[in-house]
Length: 464
Image (cartoon, rainbow, N blue to C red):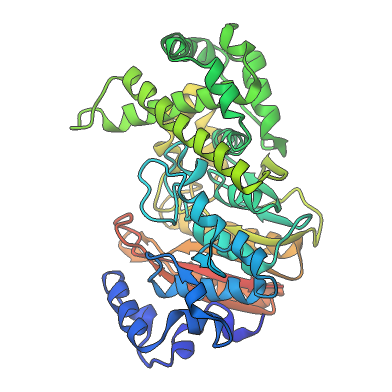
């Protein structure tokens, strides 16, 4: 792809002197509206040769970065408009037909607004710091990852990149240092394949109380068997197998199919999170009530996913969730087509503290995790220094495993630490040529209603 379509040239492309990067997030939609009066977004994205009446963006696509990503994915996929219809993130209609994303994002999850996130199983378990599946889909499209190509997320979190890759039909690998998040991601991905009619026929509402009591009564059993999982590139499926074989007590739940008992466990953990954070608020309910509510909501998503995949003939492809470190990736040189990731904002957001209820329930060693996780090492000034060293090392590892010509997309927020705003976007752009990347661009995305410390984030594009 030529430089004019890559991520840092927004103002030049639209012909404006004003710099969108210097505008406040609250002005972004107004600025996009002004642009639309002066520049037709569809013509800018596709050119003049297409019949505009047969194409339509989603109504909520209005920010500059969304239009830029729509153009980037279109430029990569325009050679086959039927493939584009199946893969596009930002188009509601292509050649007069609804896009696949229209149907996929209609499988709505808790808290979903529009078509950008929380659809399908993205919303399973309330992990803080998720990024938008719609944006990730567009980036994977821009990279041209297909079939046997591998998309990597070295800071996997709760699995957003892998879910999008699996649904697009592209193989993926996620590496994550937090074993609890490896478990969550594996379950969310496996849930895409659950045969809902069989699941609903066997998991009756009358069993829910017994299932809840089983997981609740397992707390003591789990904590008697507290475990320290070494970050040795274990597969998450094996970790779950170990959990069920040696850490949960025997019961009728253990006799269920592997994917079924896993999603029931995740429903329980989601209820545990809701109960923990909503206790003492106007939304407080009993722990068991949250379990019943989440079971109903998960069931709707599992049904919607099953029906939509059958309608669109989607069969999620292979994914591999690995407990490992982004600082020492268990992959060969030049083995991945593209990288889409969001490093942890750990210097501002304590991920261990936020998920302490989850880690404690599973009986996992949190002290060891604090010593290993990027951004949680050290204190005060030393913490930022160690974070910078680890970030540099992680970018070097991304370069090593990336194919020549491939892109690494890094979504990164600039956070305030001790009253000072960090600028790791600029640091990574400066590191890029030293490490060996031939191109490096940055796109700014305003955060509307996000964390108080996070006003915006950058999507950095580095090409090997």
